[in-house]
Amino acid sequence: MIGLDTNVLVRYFMQDDARQSAQAKALINSLSVSNRGFVSLVVVSEFVWVLSYVFQLSRNDVNEILGKLSRMPEFKLEKLVVFLRALRLCNTSSADFIDCLIFSVAKRAGCSHTATFDRKATKVPGVLRVD
Image (cartoon, rainbow, N blue to C red; front, side, top):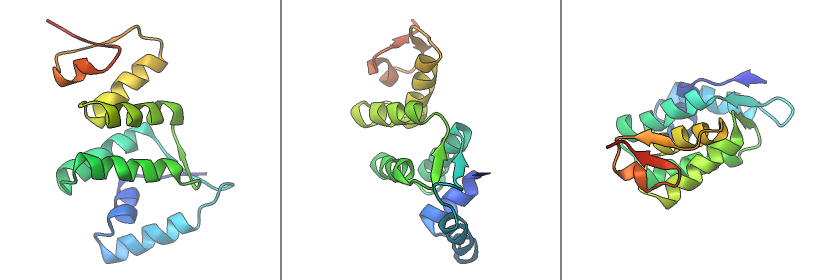
């Protein structure tokens, strides 16, 4: 297994740099179920930020890419259950993916709830607004 940095995922999915995109594609095509690419939650977070703010993709487009990422057997996502819960929450609420990831990590850690000042996020089960 090898670790993958955010820029490898960006080049692979966005195909925005001919040389690096080709290299990323070759690297990812060389991966397999027995030799996977590890994607940490930190990388996922940065990947979402880059897609949203650098490439200005819509929320739906970002979520679609994350769904593809989760279904690719050549990738091993850190805490897949947490990732999938965050993606589900994001698809069914107005909270951003990163917020949903924060809430999902906290739930997995055994937290009774997550405190936030974010008004949109308080609509997510297990999230309480600090007043």
